[in-house]
Image 1: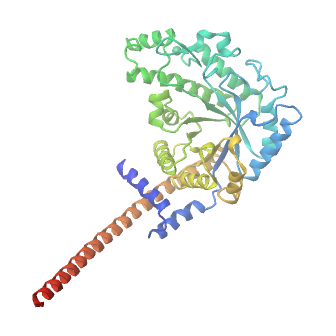
Image 2 (image 1 turned 180 degrees about the vertical axis):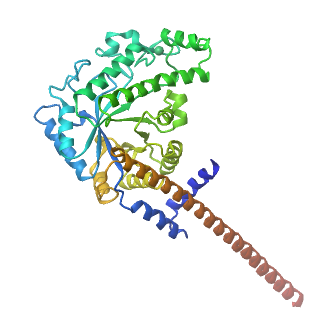
Image 3 (image 1 turned 45 degrees about the vertical axis):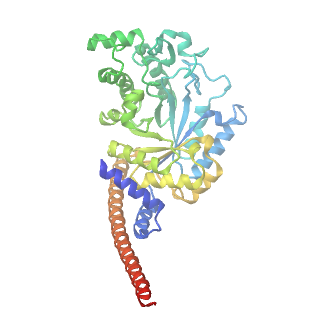
Length: 440
Ligand SMILES: [Zn+2]
């Protein structure tokens, strides 16, 4: 999409060079982003480790922190219930609870969030069971044979999604929360492979060979193999959607996904666009943790045009990457002008005072409700988002025209300047020659 790329570059110039003759256009875009956004998802990823594990202190810290979020007009919380190291943060009968907790952080968080009118979604890090090392607890401790195997034959501390026992296990945790806790949704994270060098366990190799007639070890880059691995992850997402809707149809399924939908397929076998097209995800939070505003903008444009306003996109903003509040405001602004349905802040640990003040006095000064909550709101928000995207493209095209006209004016000015210089030089030379001719 070359014209989009060009428009992006143009719009970026507009952001940086607003004062150079394109003030009118700059003001128009600013006006769009300054309109009150009464339909906007404003989420935050919250890790229980942010609060004291002390049963006396932890619950009151949760209450104070959620009250702060409410004052910022944040409207939903993604609360970690299973981390990548095989610990859970709720009263599970299936998986070991993090040993620091003698109370139930999820239960307290639901109570406090709902008392303030905030949604709370249970955030699961699905397939890692140790990430970088085998744990002395959890699924792979009990069943090391369920681990992924890399291309060199080494076990990796991630559970292989192609194995039924793995899918059943991870699903049992999700269903345990969906059944026993009054959450508003399930949020899937690490819903992918760790990289493209896995999984070559015996099960994966033989299942793939049965279907496609060759050992994937012989052709590790084969598109059929990549697609087969994507489908192992997608099947789990699809099953989760079906099962949680059966428990409570109003439960929302969402996912934290890699920001590049095309690259995610080959690098971590996460074909998240297919979940949207297949209709089994309610919203996505692509993790656009980028410091450079231009790269952030290009990424947001790519995400939105790929999703094409089929489901709400809440862009994940990496607070840990941003140098100051101005950078945060710029990124919120970019998500709005390109037509996203909201933002999710990563994460509670990095929400410093400078950021809260800037949000409260700026883009989050009015309250908003998350579009996914209501079908009609969602439709309206998606239509508005697409309209903003198209308006931004138009603005960028007009800017391009303006800059071209400026270029043309500059060229004419330069020609005039050169001509004037040459004329002056010729006159000067003429005068010198004339003086020499007259001098004795
Ligand atoms: Zn496997």
